[in-house]
Length: 209
Image 1 (tube, one colour):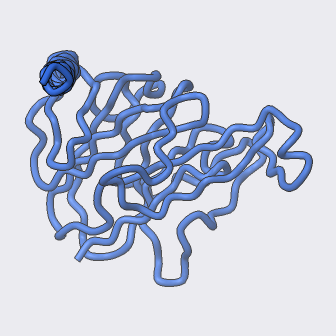
Image 2 (tube, one colour):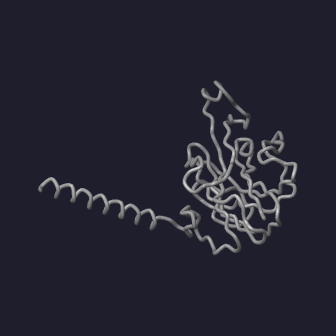
């Protein structure tokens, strides 16, 4: 009888602890929670128009999610050295490499007004850029220049202002940024174009029907 009472007490205590932690995590979040449970840490996020695509910007050393719960896009992950150069095999294993990724909470949307809410889950600054993909282009295959960046010609919008809208100086760790645009049917590449980041795997494809 005593053992049953002890076990019941332990279960109740565990439930109380879980409820307390859940309440703490919810109260600690700022911004608006999204439909997939991925909450924005950005402050003062307005009600975004159209379809909202939530984007996680990541690097090892930060909060790498590696396709975690409810994150559903085929972003790339590669190892890179300090100069943005590709590493593989033994050299990558011996070096202080970084793995980067950009994940979307959906892979397709309906054409029209689309808002992107990017949250930096990493430990260094990132950004978000949207570029169209032609029928012959493959996501992650853009040419990278000597500056470690891809050609931004034809960009449809950028979110790189810490806790703000549009283009800026980069999204600092733990912050967010957002941008709204009209997208026609087609394929689009969502990427980070800070030096070396695209080559390191920060890109995902979004299809618009």
